[in-house]
Length: 506
Image 1 (cartoon, rainbow, N blue to C red):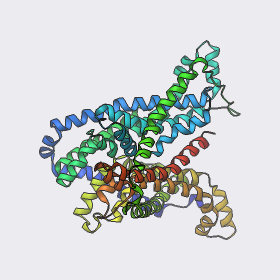
Image 2: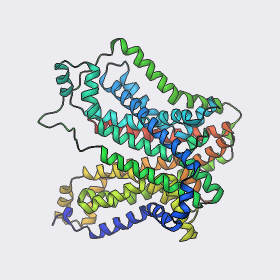
Image 3: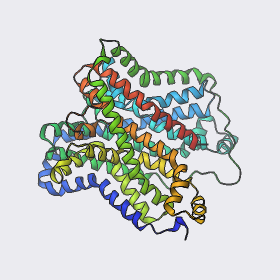
Image 4: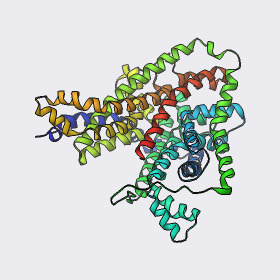
């Protein structure tokens, strides 16, 4: 019996136990609904404030997602399929705003325009921060498109815009749906960016309720509505994405696409990109430079401790998350089947919940069941694992899939035990995937704000929480060094994502 056919009973048990832990926040949402009861929840849910939050949140999604799709797809098409001057430079710059956390971008805008706020301010900050989440998958998809379909459409008499609308755009459906869903989930869960410009959403209201009533029924009621919106989005995306696939069939490789000449539209395209990048990169960075020049912000005593505590939590979170992701990634690749897919779905379902719901769930569970774990490093790391698990899973699945099982079988035929064969043959092959997954998780954990604010032990000072403390006290100069360090930490993560996108598209 080959190593790839061994009964994965023990592995299944480990993965099932971990999935149960991952689903704790989902269980919290269900349990709180039964425990509080409808007669108590109903007046908390059906009240004017919830209606106002619902309108704000729905408007944010209904208006924000289409704008991010237009910016992301438009930018991807310009850099991949047109004669835009300096396409490679623009391709990198359009992904760069992902390195600026949304709450840092909001800090830049509120520094430049103190009166910014409301749905308009929320849309400006959110779309500029999150459009790269559509741009990156759109770039990868456009690079893989077979140009013969577009050439056939032109041969039938269609112009460039009609070719884009009738041939290219339909093939971007999966990228647009997936990127739009990710943006919508970020809009639901974002706290810092909207709180800084005083724009109320469900997440900002839940944090306010938690701080005033300590996870009381009102916060729980808002949490249930927010989780319901999240699940509604997931259901909507899964039922509308369709079953169409756009893979090229037949022998040979697709030819490079013929670039579309922009002609007289070149200055317009360049001007649009300049305006977009000035708003997304220029405003936050200019505000940062301005506040760094005021006083002596680098002399703060808390700065070294914040760097060390951020690095410590990020490293621990990255290691634990990769260790949790490894069994399910191995199971789904080496032993595919319905049960592994079902368990993997449980992991993704838990991670899709907003960080505020995950944090509230862990607060309630630890206080009621294991008080010793409340506001401990263990609880913070558990939250990081649940929130950032997909980042590790995606990297590990790709790495394990590319490691040939035949090499392990050859090692076993030479007398190696299964464990030794995997350690000597497979482990070196998947080390790059382990490293990439850990880097993505660690850098995400370093920027995480909401769960860290609610779950971190007293006295914990991370870069994100220190930035938040200074910026909400209108001490913008003191917040500037923390913002700059957060951007510097994010740069490697964005570079990895960008390179992976282009690599997968080859």
